[in-house]
Length: 157
Image (cartoon, rainbow, N blue to C red):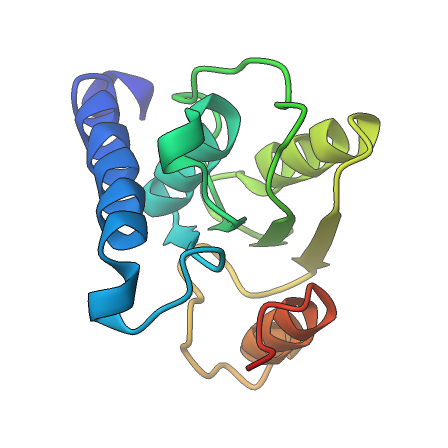
């Protein structure tokens, strides 16, 4: 996986940084709060989200991050920043790519740094469960994400 994506991941991360900066700079015209700009990514997008959460600059720091079944092998791992954004992690134990441990390790990093974090590891769901209905508890992860956003004060008007 790392060989296939090694050249692409840095470009995708640069796009992610640019997106956060752009949305923050244009928040008023976009009708969003400049202090509630977050990133969520699934699989390779989770890799990008985790990379940004660990390596941002002041102008492109997200206010929250949600890497979903992220692959961490391609992430430039550094210490969790002192002002790290809150982290919401989701994965399934039966992920066909074996990525649940990556999600657990990312959560452990945030915990060790004493930063706000929450993790949901479902026993079943596979890789790529996203919003697909499978009649499994993982079908309802999006409700847990909404609960978490609310608890972080990110849904207040």
